[in-house]
Amino acid sequence: MESTRKQLIDLLKEQDSHISGQQLSEALDISRTAVWKHMNELKKDGYEIEAIQRKGYKIVSSPDKVSKNTLQWGLNTKWIGQHLYHYPQVESTQDIVHQLAKEGKPHGTVVIADEQVKGKGRMAREWHSPEGKGVWMSILLRPDLPPVQAPQLTLLTATVLANVMDKRSALVPSIKWPNDILVHHKKVAGILTEMQAEQDRIQYVVLGIGINVNQEDGEIPSMIAHKASSLKMESGEKWDIQEFVQSILSTFEKTYDSFIEEGFQEIKQEWERYGYKIGEKVTISTMRRDFKATLLGIEADGALLAKDEQGEMEKLYSAEIHWGEGGYH
Ligand code: BTX
Image: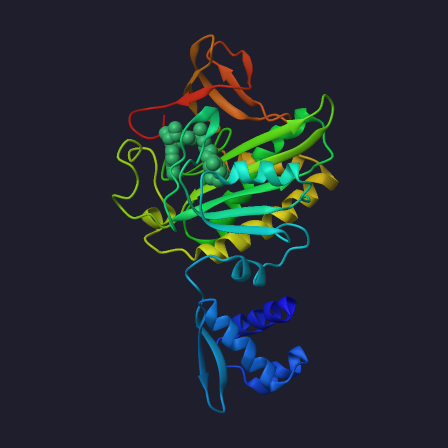
């Protein structure tokens, strides 16, 4: 039933014009009445469908609201999002996935919410996640990797987000080490990777993705408005959150699978292609000191590589990067 509906949506989406009930019933191997019933179900889930006699059906608009059904029907993936939970409001999708992980839910389980009231960033920072305006989701991964490789998953996710934004718009995203996606020097997305591990094996990883999508001017809290923005504010266009999430999940699956098979090299190159300020001079603050350095790229273990003014190479695992006036600090 669900897969027929998914095929039906795919068929309708492929067409620019109408597709007849007869064609649909043949393609899906179901009766005309069954096609009609499916159409009614789609309407219930918020699809607007035009039906014209003798011409057939056409999707006029897809639902604005995210739901488990509509997300899964258009999802072309093998393992990610096959278990998917959608909630209108949660404290944090991270906590829900931790819980699901403990209950034994599989690799690729996804939790997505319209709103988070206790969205979290790194080091117990807050992540502003207003209702219906962004992607607030967490993915459960059970990689067969040693814990030292966990930072690679954050870097991988950053390349996936940059790639999808790049493909779907004229925006030029960049990745600020280790986990921010910037557009026009402002943060539009963040990644939070939390891990449960034994000494030499990861038990599971909860990968949190927060993306500001459709906030308008004035909807970003004033405290962070100088350094944060949304895709809509930067591109001038409203984004279809549903399709955006589907494309993130399918790109994630492909990238993750090739990372597991072929290793980190390609991700590293991709990361450096989008890397913010790579090849440029910045100020780096670590626990020990502040110094000026040129950013060179990343290492396989996720460290940031920089060369200081004395020509010394520095490998950084935890640091803040600053530059110029304004912009992100
Ligand atoms: P971070 O620690 O790099 O960034 C947090 C900082 O970013 C905050 O201290 C604030 O200055 C700024 N900030 C807060 N909200 C926003 C926002 N909406 N847009 C831009 N800047 C903001 C980044 O942490 C990791 C964020 C992960 C969020 C996802 S959402 C799904 C999942 N659930 C959850 O609770 N967290 C993750």
